[in-house]
Length: 224
Picture 1 (cartoon, rainbow, N blue to C red):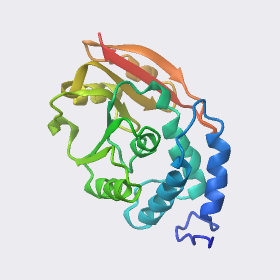
Picture 2: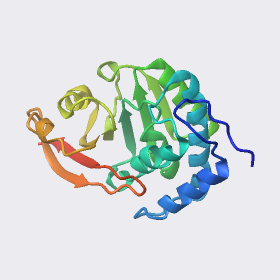
Picture 3: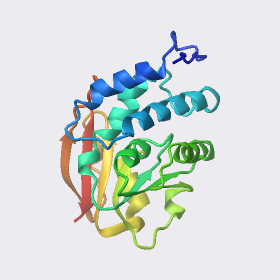
Picture 4: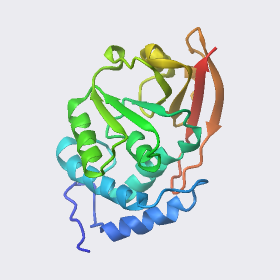
């Protein structure tokens, strides 16, 4: 396949779809769960699409497609075992992370990807269309103004402010058995001291992301 020329000043070489596929295969094999057939090709297509849009819309600070493998795809997929229930809400989804990668490997779950930034939800809608993800709904709205009558089973957030702000923002969207998953880098000691009344921390999981040399923690919360 012909290589894709990079135009970002931070990128120094071309990356072909085949090279992306090989990088993904290596790291995906290290995940502690199996992936559905065809998901590898969708991950490659998603990275190519993200790189294309990133040159104009600045959707993510990661400019190198090879780094997107670990920092975007694997970093999203690693939380898959902790999803609860059928209805998942990705709050502040940005460029569709972690929602798009998780939706690719969970066709039986319904994902709502929410962000107030219109250019980002335009991209996520395009990704949904091109990847044919029928289990994804894209919403351009502030979380405080959004409503889901039956509630959601899992709220997940990768880059949504503090845990305190996350809980206050999604409280009205939670089903009775709902769980909140806050994806963090370093251990969020200070944030854990400000969990709002009525909620409790269930567990903090230290995550080992294949191909990524960085701290990752998942904070699991629920109503007390």
